[in-house]
Image (tube, rainbow, N blue to C red; front, side, top):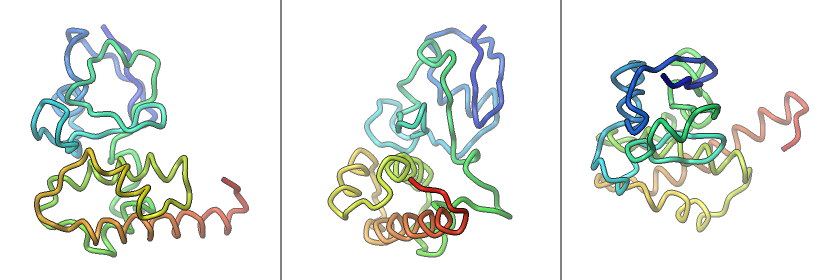
Length: 162
């Protein structure tokens, strides 16, 4: 039995410790934003955030996650109240087929949590492990910059500092 903290909620998972996090998220917790792409950690469609870092959930076994905080796209915002990264991707129409977008958003979110004003080069480097075959890279880049601006304006209006 593994205790897993996902999106702020604890879950007791009865699964083999070697089970990839992706399978638990999708099958046990019914959180379907992280996608199964390659199953080898080479495409990024399964990206989630673990303790502030982007992680490929298809190759991350449960045994490494006890006591750690896992965040999925579902944990960032809702349809009614999207997180800045979600809002920016919608406003920039960054998704084409949509398969890679959840992973792209999670990797971008992890970047923005540690660097509130990334350059194009930093964004490209961060998103490099995530594949997008539709060619919406420029819209994704614009969306990350928009999300950074939205996050900064939200911080300014609440008086928070990063």
